[in-house]
Image (tube, rainbow, N blue to C red; front, top):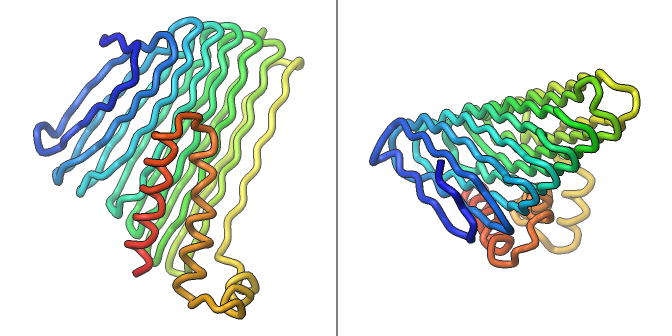
Amino acid sequence: METVSSSQTVVISSSDSQSVSRQFAVQGETYLVMMIEGDRKLDLQLEVRALEGSRMTFLLINHNREEVILHDSYHLEADSESVIAYCQLNDYPLQADGEYHLDGQGASLKVQNAAMTSDNKVFRQNTLHNERNTTANVNNYGIAMKGGSCDFDVRNRIGKGCHGSETHQTSRILTYDSQSRGRILPVLYIDDNDVRASHAATMGQPDRDQIFYMQTRGLSYQEAMKLITVGYLLPVSEVIDDENINSLLRQEIETKVSECLM
């Protein structure tokens, strides 16, 4: 397992290998950016351990020009804080299985996921509170373009004896027309009384009244749709304190939206 104690960028190329496994142990305050590139189908196994007292920001950006099968797991030790952000805006299939283990008291997790596709993207996320006084917030923002589908299967579990823990999830999918599809399955498993838990899910097409209002202010239909789409995805960047990573993520969202709505 590779120990990471300073900010760095890791590039994974499917052109080099179609099956990749990486393990990281993060200590101190660290910003880790992972870029997926290439033009072949990729099976990526990723394991990250946030060591006790660490402060981790992890950003995964998917540029691969073929299907990606992602299995990623995170283990958060005591008093660690982890922000995990995904930018999955390429127009290729994706199957993502994420597991988040809050193993130590005082561990804190925030997951921010932005997805856009005209193909099929499926996300299965499992958050497990294994100790008391742990906190998790899992937030998904998906856009299914014409002919595309986006699925969020989100499960948060607080185990018995994990007093004082909090777990929350929010999932939103914007479907562009009757040919695009979305599916949200929010699930909470709670096995302790002294906890806080919530889930929220919304799905629907862009607000026609909002688009009309923007057009009356001089914007074209395409310009209005770009503004709505960018605004829909930008919350994924709000949890990142590092301005360089934040700027990279905002630029990625704006560029991909412009490409899709040309």
